[in-house]
Image (cartoon, rainbow, N blue to C red; front, side, top):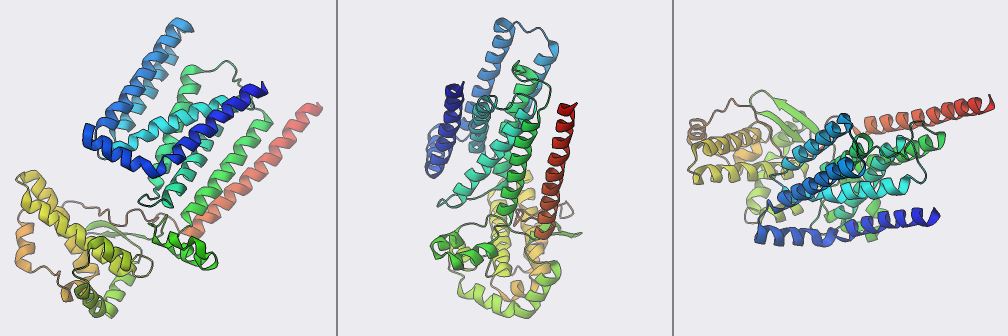
Length: 411
């Protein structure tokens, strides 16, 4: 039994290592495949793998296990449908669907390894939490890898991939070795991994540019992290009836105050660095040292890019959509970066703005993606308060359950 368990965990370790070791080269592979076989190759490949797997499951359930339960086949259809649905959502970033294979397979290996210790329904949740921990660590390694970046959405995708596999195991396969009675030891495992996941995600969310700058002062060997894209940042979700929604590291009041007080200085910097490439400008005036100027430049870039797209396209629907983006981004600049914009070389005159308004419906709702990765639903302090409350709840819950199990045994 121990040899089998060891081999199962060895597969977990080897597959996890394969995921981590692929981080530096995966983008090159994706680029080569996209150029030779097309970007949608990844979607078709994953759909083929998922389809082949579910066809095998139908055969296995029908002819090997002689299963005649309609509910299990219904669940099989539900899980397969969920896989297909989520895979098709990535038509704009097709390479990301590889997560479904990587972390679905990791979920399989984890289930096989955990079943030697956990033989009740908690195994499915515990396996998913382990997928979450590995997926989060994967993103951490990506963050410190050149030309790769951290993305909480990828963490969510990793968990989704693992969770869908566990749902299939629980609802379709229903392994006979997994009983229905929950054991105290299983709950301890589950609560331990849940606590670790909460703390780990909290630490990642707290790894803001300011915190990176703080700890690199004490550990100079980590100073290269200052050049990486921010892992996380907290900010504001700003709703404006004329614009719609946009995001900022600064409050609306602070944006207008900085523009009023330093608009002349910012405009002069924009003139001085007008020939500096966009990405180089963002590196020099990064969100940690110059949040106002950084956001101004990103909004400006998006405005000009979509204005250019609108003028180049012959499709009326696309032209209207592109002009809407350009108009709204310019409106953000006019309302919240007004003095800086007016004194800079990038100010638009009224005839151009009126021409854009004539070619699109400016009353349509708009949500700018600029800085949309910011945490705006809660503050860092609130996040840690919630995490500590949950940890305390887990601790108390474990103590209560331990007493109940002991009382049952004594009777």
